[in-house]
Image (cartoon, one colour):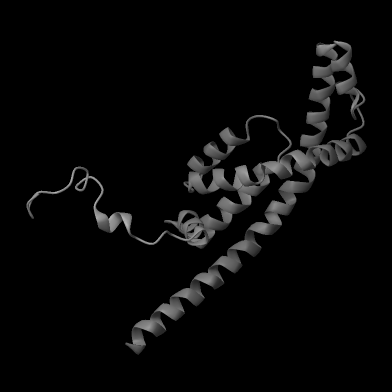
Length: 179
């Protein structure tokens, strides 16, 4: 084979691309999360992603994240990643939110694990009704707890991210100035 001829597939996958060191996971996450986002937008993305991620709604949080990210012009990938990372918390917090909702909103059918018993008996309609009441109560408790916490967390997170950004820019200016 001559010098000008290349092996099959070499143009498609140049050697330099194959031998680049892998990007660290932390750096990749930081790049994806902060790409094109101001500290305000990043803090809003994280706050909304976590608040919606723990929302005790079995379906629909992904759609809500996409709609809010589009409305506020936020990074949808970052918001969905935070939302999906909070999914185990959503499952873990469903019962506490439901119990708190039973205490705060005492009307409707009795909750607890009764809908599982109803489903095992074959009463799917009764089980669905009990699950709907448990979800409604959990959403009420979420509105009364998670949203105020998100409203408190947003300005705190924004200040932290602004300070971090200022420190990075000061380090970059010092590095350029010393050269």
